[in-house]
Each structure stands twice: as C-alpha cells, then as structure tokens.
Image (cartoon, rainbow, N blue to C red; front, side, top):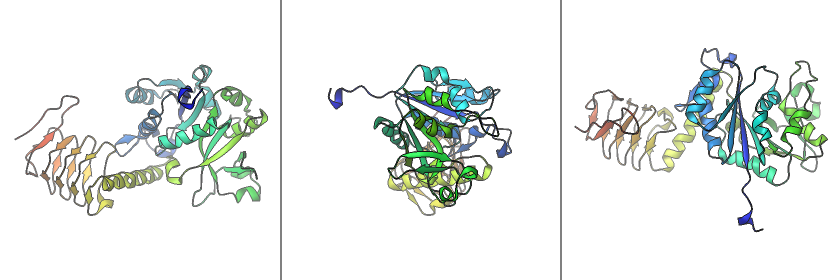
Length: 352
C-alpha cells in the first residue's frame, strides 16, 4: 500500500476542564476567563478543532456553565463528568467510554493551557506514528523549581516524569520539565491508564505515572520540547495576565506580517477575531473588542475603542472614538463608510 493509500490516523483528544480554579479568586469558572476576547477553553477547543478527530471534554460536577460553553463552541464534542477529583489520570478515565470506542492516537490537553497550537498537537501524534506508546511534551522554563522533570536516558528514551520532591539531586539538575500535555497510543491507552495506581499521600491517580506504566507494558516513551510560552498554564490572575501578554505579542506580530502599521504596538489591544486589512494604520492606545473588521487603508487614531464594527476602506476613526453596536455611527468617524454590526450572519448596516 502506498503512502497515499494508507488510511488516515484517527484521533481522540481529551480536554481536562474539571479543575475548581480556586486560586483565581473569582466566582467565574477558571476556564471561562478570557484572553484576546476568547475563553481559555475556547482557545484550546480552537486548537484541537484544527485536528481531524473526536473531542471529549471532562468537567467537574456542577460545572454546567463550562459544559454549555463547550456545546456552544464545539457542538460535536462530548462532555463527561469527573464526579470525584482524584487526579489527572482519574479525570481522563472519566471519558472511558470515548476511549473504549478506539482511536489510533489519544491526546490529553488541558483547558487552562490556552496557547497550545495545532502544530504541537500534531508533533505529539507524529511521535506515536513513529512507534512511541507515550509522548510527553516538555519545556525549559527560566526557573524549573516546582516542576516535574522529564528524565531521559542515554538513548533518548523517556524514563520517567519525576516530581521535584521525589527527584534526586541529579534529576533536579534536569532543565526539561513536564508541561502536562501527553499523547498515548490508542491501542494501549486504556491499559496504560488502568495500570496507574493511587499509592501516594493524596490517594490520587496521576497521569505522570503513565510513563512508568507504559514502560512496564514494554512500550517506548519519548519526550518532545515546546516553547515555554506555548505551554503556559493559567491558575492565577497573574498567570492569566501573562498568557494575555504572550497572545497579544502573537497577534501584533501577525498584524505586522499582514502589512499593518502600529506606531506603538505594545499599546494596542487585539482580539483573536480582529481582522485588519493591508495598509491599515493604528495609532497608540487603541482597543479592539470582539467582532471588528478594518478594511484596507483605514486609519484608527489614538484612544479609540471599537467593538462589533466593520470599518470601511480608507475610513478614519477617532481620536477618542467609541464605536459599538447601538452607538452613533457619526461619532468620531471621518471619511466614512463605517458599518456597525448588530448581529450575525445578517448584520444591520449603517451607511450615512
């Protein structure tokens, strides 16, 4: 059979979203906090949605708001409830019925790691296609203190994920740390997960033990490396702000590549759905809320805030303009047209 005739590998991605998020200090579920105008779980579902496969999302009991958000963002995803919080491996097994239906690749992602990319998920899958039973994504933080270490032998095989409190001095010197993201060979995923025991102080089932479980079954384990920014987890408001900063750098860089002029890019806030045409100029201190399109040659002047609007080609907005659905389309706008969106897919148009 030629390469072209080989059947495409199937994939199940299990997204863990059952954490309580108490360190956020907020009544809003952690994964529903947003960066770039999109919820944390929305970012993760966007990344996994680019992978051709099934998606299972594991939520905690009483987390109806998260389940509803998942259904709105990805109607085809299945939601499962982890009724007791007994560790990450226990959470994955909450989706046991999805696992039992089989897939070539099983990827475990986290709803509070919003910057992960489809390309990195594909790299994990590639390691499975090359013969690994387990593939773990690592990173090298500026300070590895507190992170589990990925212990690799002389042959390049992943031997263990060692938590810092259990690591030897030599293992603590390892700088490759565990991000949490992992891929399991689908034909062995359940066997690996069911090998994991809760013989620890907290009596929990840890996904990090999957490496030892796989090796006990005679399967190879391997480690891949990603940029530290991509696997940034969000557990606190400070980490949420850090993830926002990384995302804004990504969005501004993409805008520059597309021919947008920003004289002080660090002062411009973009959403993930902001659409900017060629030769758009954005002056300092501009905020783009959700649902903004700016067409070629437009000028957005300083201290303007736009949300839910289409700015026509060559338009000039601001300075100090606030444009949103329901606002006066003449306010702060020159060289119209500017179109204000009220709803999709049939927006109301305002063309003075």
